[in-house]
Amino acid sequence: MYSEEDYVIYLGLRDKVELLRNRRRLKQDNLGKVLKLSRSQISNVESGRRDLSLKQLEKLCEYFKVDMPYFLMSETTDSCFDLIEKAKLLLERIN
Image (cartoon, rainbow, N blue to C red):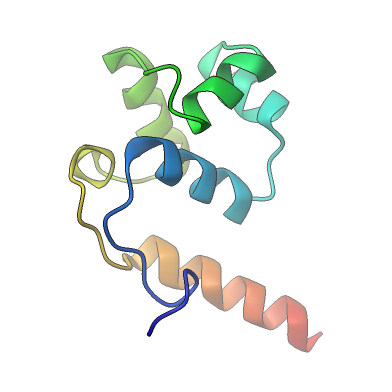
């Protein structure tokens, strides 16, 4: 069985937003500034109580450098972005 760090599959929008935010080590406040949302609104997105507008989703794609299908499709696997982030984390652990 794969761990979350090894393979991501069947994640919804809320999970993907939180996953990307955590991989960048951002606080909800920081992501909120990017999307012009409050920390509590980001929290609501990550808990599934709030959706993002198309403009907010486009900003999110730009910020995290991912394509729109990453957020819109329920099935996803590691992308180059994920692999680069994992490599950075691995190098941080070594140093």
